[in-house]
Image (tube, rainbow, N blue to C red; front, side, top):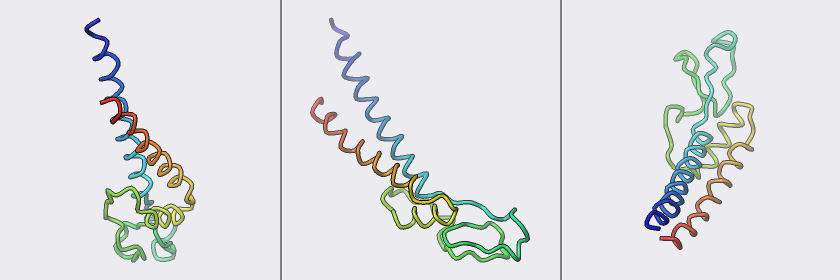
Amino acid sequence: GDMFEPLTLYGYCAGKVLFIVCTYLMCLATVNFSIDHSGAGSKHNTPVEEGVCNSDPEVETIESDCDTFYLWPYRYRTAIRRLEGAGVGPLPYYTAIVYFTGVLFFTLGLVAEV
């Protein structure tokens, strides 16, 4: 009856919005990924890899943007450099960005419904 639209359409739209937010946050997690090598080995003999952040002030990092938090999910160079510097590889970023892009196309249905 009267509750059909609020129970179906509104929940559907809210679910899509939350799905977009969650996949966006997944992309941000991969773009801003970094590890801390301050506890690994001797602090003067530990090589700092490119793209890996280090909190030890005596060891300089090659990466100048370790403390920068990026909000743009398509920073693929930064994401891949940081992930490979941590020894993970680029697959988490590829997975997250394809998922997010697919969800953005998923919003075409949301526009058609509203």
